[in-house]
Amino acid sequence: MDFNDALAALAQKVQNQKDAILTEEATKNAFVMPFISTVLGYDVFDPLEVVPELTADVGIKRGEKIDYAIMRDNEVQMLIECKSSTAPLKLEHASQLFRYFAVTNARIAVLTNGQNYHFFTDLDAPNKMDEKPFLVLDLLNIDESLVGELKKLTKERFDLDSVISAAGELKYIGHIKREIAEQFRSPSDEWARFFIGRVYDGSITQKVRDQFAPLVAKASAQFINDQVNDRLKSALRGSNYAPASETEAEIPSKAVSDQDLDRDTEIETTLEELEAYQIVKAIACSEVKPQRISQRDSKSYFAILLDDNNRRPIARLHFNSRKQKYLGLLDEEKVESRHPIDGLEDIYTYADEIRAAVARYK
Image 1 (spheres, rainbow, N blue to C red):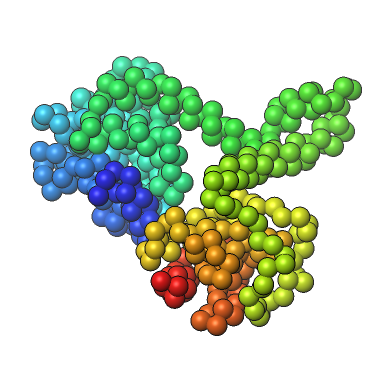
Image 2 (image 1 turned 60 degrees about the vertical axis):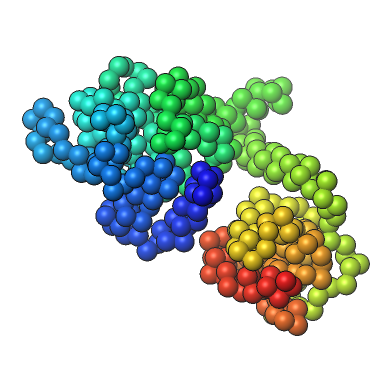
């Protein structure tokens, strides 16, 4: 299994099992050890490569242990401190990492809860761990731009100098990207004022700010949606993509009628629909090659098809209603039943039905 496949497999495991992993020890066994072994490529059962429960006396602290130390040439290269998968990662969780970082030769420290991995080094002061990570990896939302940097920490490609030299840029780019994302989600007064000043000629009073603040938030959301749609159309332009026509023969449907849908009649492919499509596609890939799974959006629903064939439906996404979203599944007679879902993760509970739908066309 190559690096990308190993990373994807672990991400899927975290997605499937995270709700059942409730303790720190379970997090280590289920998620962190596989990360060290299958993703980074170190032998967790070889003490010359991975030392669990590394003990060192630090100042007045005696007998403290760090969860894992990764070794190379009999020297500590990387320290890993683990927390329960149910706990968010906070800087105060890294107190042992700070102390061990100062008394070992390690240049990389990792704080993790099995899903999120925060990588630290000593950019601000030599031999003193930075307070902010230079790389943040979320296995359930992998930033592809970071994968190449993560590969440099694997046993096969270990390149500490390259990682350290790129860490400063990665650190600030990561912070800037997260700040931009936060501004798009919840625009601050400064962000709103910047754009108001660009489009409004008058004095920016409190009344003007109150008037324009929701417009800035709405424009930000629409901008992201437009970017996603443009990328999608560009990607599909070479694969004979066409929206489902209202004149195409409809597959019989029952259960909930389309009368409960309350969005505009124009077709609008949302980011949530695309994310749901990727989940269904990942499930269906156990039966067929991923390139055979395609999608078409229409006014009534978002269709997921095999071989871009409207007569081979796998599932339908009914996300137009603001009150309730539905996953449409079709039986052998292509009669649809709609299942209410509260979040995209609920789609995984219908994995068997999705695979069965694909298998019927094989």
